[in-house]
Length: 370
Ligand code: ADP
Ligand code: MG
Image (cartoon, rainbow, N blue to C red):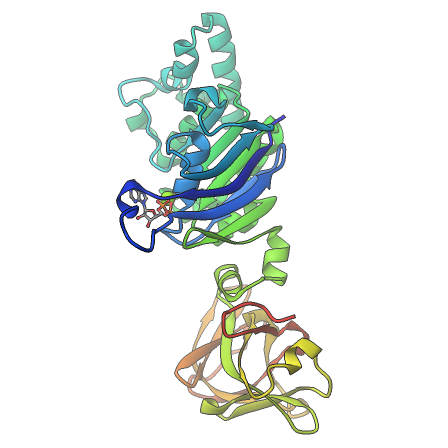
């Protein structure tokens, strides 16, 4: 049983205390990680992910707020007494030790018996499929194998909570996706609470039971992967989750026998509907921004559907199973994702249609309206 609770946690690094506007590397973050949950913390580089994780591990002092594990306040508890194991991006293996010795090291320090150590090492090696590597040194291993050893070293201690700080970042794309599957299996098999930090939204989406999205030290949204994707609370989350990213268009809503969205610079104006949500009506003739994902924009293939905009094709990418089409749109691009792979002509003009019920509306501060 291991529940981790963060209450109004902030981090102010020594050097940042003097400035008048104190910089908080982590700014007033609260959330709870349930027992046996796989929680992912995701956000761009420098947003405070590692700082947050290191505060949970006890490697960094908590400036403000409280950390609880199973209801017990941990702020002043030594890292070694928190019953937490952390896996880093740069494996941090002992180069002169064999894989066996690397995995066994923690238990040896704790004076476990040789027999117990041996049993646990074998069990761990089996789980991570590195049994054949036990007598080798780290330098003789591939990146993926080294990362498994680093994970093995954490698992063998059977801690209450696992913390991972971008453990797959040094691996190539194929190995990364394979390790993602392995981590899911591992989580199922050892049934522990895990907190996993990454800047990679694909990793976050595939691994997390829930995902905490961070930006500039602040929690933007905490939700299940599908909820983040389908119901982002703000423009940051909408743009960060999903690849290619959501299309954003600034414009105004106008009323003339129906509610229209108008993007003046491109001459693109289309009917949203004869009725729209009341909260959006408040923005009539005021600046507003809409967002729509690439898979929710269609190329109108026949003349029966009146297109919302007519735009020029700048580029397209055939991915095998789908096609990404880049339309030039004022100074920007609108990306369309489609399953059809018919050849398109560069610079050709095509009509596009926005799926009305998939449009997301943002106010000037980037918060979702409605
Ligand atoms: P992330 O892991 O998301 O990339 P970090 O937690 O490493 O972000 O960093 C968050 C912010 O705190 C950054 O602005 C970084 O420069 C700053 N920072 C990180 N470590 C220290 C430190 N030891 N001293 C001062 N500032 C730091
Ligand atoms: Mg980091």
